Image (cartoon, rainbow, N blue to C red; front, top):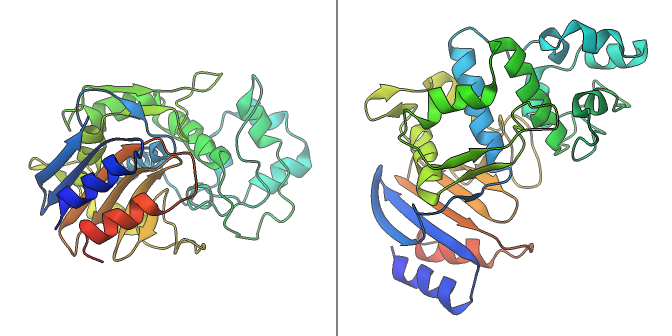
Length: 287
């Protein structure tokens, strides 16, 4: 491993990387930059945290991801929908939303009533399962989980994930109606995101405490929906022999259990280049 060459690339190329950490077999071995001082936007990496919350609820029998979305929404929100939309949604499960396999949904909910906006999106073929990456899917899962738990999902995440992991620096964003906005709007330190990754790396265990079941982790991080990036699970991306947590401007946690490696970095790089990833793969993974 040539961690110094990776950080040299970051400095010389002036990549906007806030900080990075590398863990080998669960132990922090390398760090660079601001890893534990400031919190930063993690964008869609929030979805993976929501997946973990859904998994904890699933483990406890509080949330069934195989059930239709409508099973978990307030009756008054469903009753006002046209029959065509009720019919559309009745067979779309939470699992379909978590694997981004509901076509035609716009990228994000809009307006003051984002739940109404989302439920009124027309899906031309509700039975088709294309990969369609949409914040609406994650938002709806968060709403459904709120009603399943009868509790704010943000509070649930604080109690069941952040506090047990010793994560004290964070912000949780909400939508216009006050629901935890599970698609984005969460802020963490680099070290905080690493701790979340370590729960998954360690098969659901953190400091000897079971956070999440192995069964859920195996399912959530497997390829359940194919896409051009190699596959998608329950808000996790396939990455080589492992999987990753991804945010849109290169907020990453790569989890490679077979290799015993976990790499986290938070950045703000608004382009589609792969230079940072290629440097990490060359100098950290030796590819």
